Image (tube, rainbow, N blue to C red; front, side, top):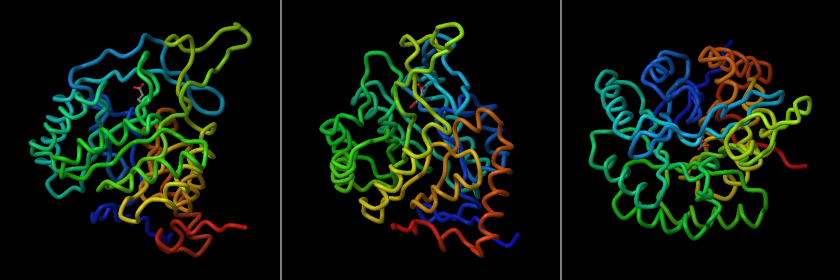
Length: 314
Ligand code: SIN
């Protein structure tokens, strides 16, 4: 194989575009260590809240035929746990590329508090502000409230100077792609991550005439094969609307090298793997890299930049 998967993201050169999606295999230091020792080129922590959260009652994640449904409810070990891990990791791996730190506060003020702490800390990686968790009962997804996106980002960029991206939910209408892109283009964002799970799907076990997860009467975020076309549409829609300085991370339905190739063709720079990482464990990254390289070799591409974003229209 001659194809190179080298990926430049925010002026850093990563060995390949693959990493985990926040929420999968990144809750504990053990899981984070396993990611750091895997073939993923970097990793992101579980979205944290200021204090540890137990999350929703179990069962709250189910693998289903074409993917997954979850209503985890942001279980996490709390902001300080991940900050301590991240800063120790940086010291131990001073030559490693930046890692990603995800935050998902329950309110604007909680997000600002965590971002202020990150700004004042020694953390010199990349921060992802999760505006799209669909699973906290009584808390609508922030990124479906366009005024609230503006309010948060305006306040954040009054003090935050480290690289910051936002995790977006899927949008389903050109008017919404346009409106959100117009807002995001007003801020010095490093990237957008498309997409979080498709919120509030319902998977039914017809034999038992029952839902399959406990929280929210079975409603939960969909991942895996169900979501790939929606994820690709969102990657493409934002890639073609955002200032070129705002990169796009593609997340959703990456199960094979071909899925990865399609996300890159739509314009994604980095690629996050969720459901399939949960299914297969960290060895998924080795397989995805080999499969992507095989496709590139077959097509005669030696680098990702030769085809990234170059999706043809008819
Ligand atoms: C969760 O913990 O409920 C999943 C996180 C997310 O979808 O943002």
